[in-house]
Amino acid sequence: MRSVAVTGLGAVTPLGVGFRRAWSRLIKGDCGIVSVADRAPREQYAALPSRIAGIVPEGPRDQGGWNSTEWLEKGDERRMARFAQYAMAAANEALEDAGWAPTRDNDLEATGVYIGSGIGSFDDVYDTSVAYSQGGYKKVSPLFVPRLLINLAAGHISMRHGFRGPNHASTTACTTGAHALGDAARLIAFGDADVMVAGGAESCIHPLAIAGFARARSLATDWNSTPQLASRPFDRERAGFVIGEGAGVMVLEELQHARARGARIYALLQGYGISSDAHHMTAPLASGDGAYAAMRRALRRAGVAPSEVDYVNAHATSTQLGDAAENKAVKRLMLEGPEGKDRANEINVSSVKGAIGHLLGAAGSVEGIFTALSVKEGILPPTLNLESPGDPPEDFDCNYVPKTAQRLPVKVAVSNSFGFGGTNASLVFTKYD
Image (cartoon, rainbow, N blue to C red; front, top):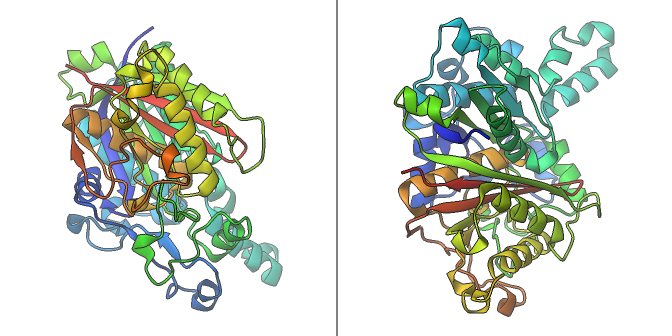
């Protein structure tokens, strides 16, 4: 089986556009969660119980902001839904970072794209439904269906760059981004491609979307006046996730192919494990069995023992049940073995969702980027707003990197993603020397 290297990164996040800006702000402890109470339509947002979100900042590109005219080509904004625009920008950054701009037929045929989204273009569905209801057939844009299709993010990227390898998409709720990275790595491992542009994108900050999650009692509602405090992974006061938007894209490359062209290698994507809870539409197994199975399978595929893991980038969305289940799964796996009982406080776990919120279908890929950077640079990103781990506190006795980043050599890191429907994925990144 062929090895897979991470050679390019690109990100659009609430901490800024561009992976370097997002990473530096994350490490400094900045937060991209803001109030949406004054966004249009103001009366709809103001009536919601949760009026906060992780929003991609508007502004000039040289300041890490989003201005579509600076990131996209003429006509892209009309043809592409916002989630696909974010994916295109992140992919372009990742390809530039990787130094991969092939022109030969063999290279173009060996390069593929795999981009997913959990929900896709929510705005188009809502706006077109209203327009059709009020005005009928002629109010429906001919671009309505193409803008809806989740695989069009990958399609637009492949058309822009002429990539003729695998062209694929995943849509597995909040596990989408991790599934896209893991599946793309397998396409390389099995010889279907030498290079894959892979990740996830999401943009559904909309009153109806927030209303739906709020009615499901999934969102934080008690911090509308202090949005930066709302997402509290592993904290005993956690009370729901904060919706976010963005995109994360990696250039994944067969190791020998990357070495032959002298590419910079951030890390190896060495393990990928997937599982199902087979339990409930939205709630995880309280035992954490599904998360445990995904991590165990990923480590087995990577040929890594649990005791060798230096860092776990947790899915931890700041919900009571979800964080507790993942915490239980991480401790169960990492404490296995004769030395396990004595090393609970040596397990390094953090969640970046205190800084960016939950990016849904983009979460796994953005967090995968941060995990690869942790391996490359030896820095653990902080878990913001972590005042008192729990509940109960005796079960939360790992190092959750509270509030402040920590420097630590990282040779092996796990990135977790779990989604509605009980779908789980874990990725294992290892240091490349």
